[in-house]
Length: 397
Image (cartoon, rainbow, N blue to C red):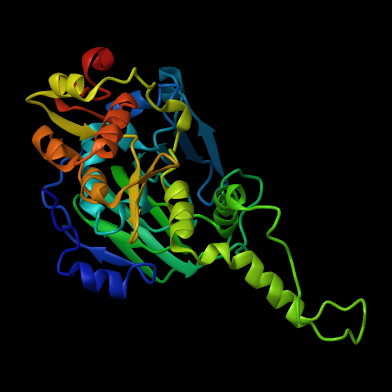
């Protein structure tokens, strides 16, 4: 069951007054919050080849900052100074089932917008410097205290410090300052300068959101639209007036071109495919589970009898419906289904845990059954009793 994390704000108030507009501090958003991982366990993740990790070291009181990329070793940690460094582990939700469950509490924003959960562990004075992000972020304080300084609105023209691989702002105009305690949460809209400094050892959970650039959207638009076009669709200018200047491209010509290029993009199903395919692309495609052999419906029911199923931590689902069809998006791919599958795909995307009876009841036709079998073969849904977190087994040794 999800809990309300916005304090005295309703979801409607938050979306109306703050989302993508201005920051808000929510005291005690998660009462009695217990960290999912210890600092030692987090450092253990950074030793793994497949897990994206970074160390940020502040060389002087005012910088510059140094970035080191993992995987790291125990020797790397023994050589660190006593203060002014930060460990960042990306996509914790991919590796720790409990972290994936934590993200479920943020589904008052469409789930296809959620990117990942990053954990930042810092010793006293640790920071990644004053900077801004191109996306929304919730900063949930998990352990210890971190001071957050809020600054100006930024863009690509904002000056940054040279001689470092980090995009640290060279100018920071502080407007507010807060110290967050465990369970407190700070929301920051895109392009807002912020500067977090650890007060003693601390741990912060960052819930980030996908915000594709126009160039990414256009690239995906071409991937979606180009296969549907034919050689018969061409620029034309029937009914033009005599040319006053034979070499001039007039405004009517550019309007005809705009109408031609955007005609396909006026279709809701095409726009849905662009968003659905781009926003469900896997964060680390090379780490997706290997597909298993497909089985029959009856064999699958025998396999999962009496079990509960979970959506895989790597899975990204979304769907779109119109009067004629249901489009299901999974890891950048689109599956066209009949409208009778709408409730099935909504359940798959809206929840993380499913009962077999529930899925069997919703799979009304062969297309729905085949979808479940496909997701099972891809290991995008799995038996809950098979859950093994990253620290199970020998990983604690």
